[in-house]
Image (cartoon, rainbow, N blue to C red; front, side, top):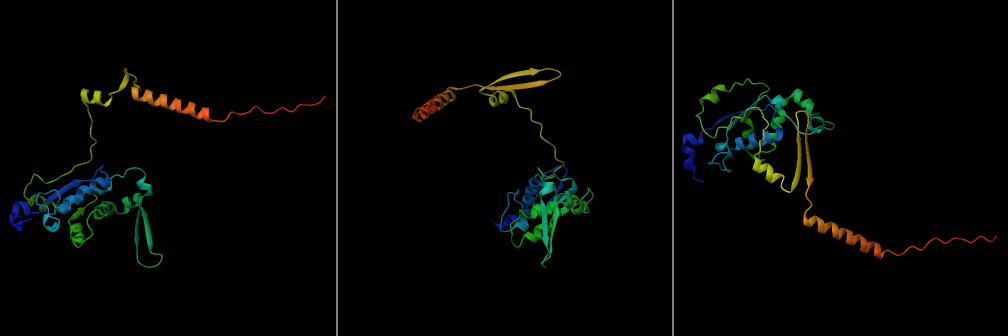
Length: 227
C-alpha cells in the first residue's frame, strides 16, 4: 500500500469510539473492540502499520457486561507471581466486583496479535466502571467521520417475519393454531413424504430378513417321570 494515503489528515487521524457495555456479551464485544483498535474497519487498513490505522476506544459501564451459560461460576482468571505456590485464581463473579475492567481488557488483549504493537494498542483501550470519563475533550476534538462507531446498550432484536417467510419456514408441515385470548397452542405434524415411506418399508424388510436368518429354537425337553 502506498504511504501517501497516510498524509491525508481525514484518513490518518485517530478516531475515538465510545461503547456502552451494558448488557453486551463479553466475547462479542471484545471482537468489535479489537477490530477498532487495529483499524480493520477502515479502507486504509494495513497490517504492517496497525498503530497508524488503529483508533481509540472508550468503554463505559464495564460492570454491566454479561456472560452466557454458567461462566460467572465456572470461568477462572489466573495469575502467577513467579514463586512456588504463587498461583492466584479468581472467579469471574468475584472479578466483576473487584476489577470489572479486567474482564473486558483480558478478552480484548487475547484477540490482538502477539507482537511488538500489542502493548501500544492496549494503551488505546480506555475502560471505566461508570459513565464518567476524562476523554470528553479528545472525543469532541476529533473530526466527524461516518466510520466512527458509537455502540449503546445491548437491545435484543425483535424479529417480525413476513407471511412469505413463515410459509417458507413451515413448508412441509401442517399447522393447527388455536389462538384464543387465554392460550395460544401451536401443534406441528410433519407430513410424511414418499422418501420417509420408502425408508420405513426398507427398515421393515431388513427386520424380516434378520428374523428369517435366526436359527429356530427347539422347544425345551420335558423329562418323563416314571410312575
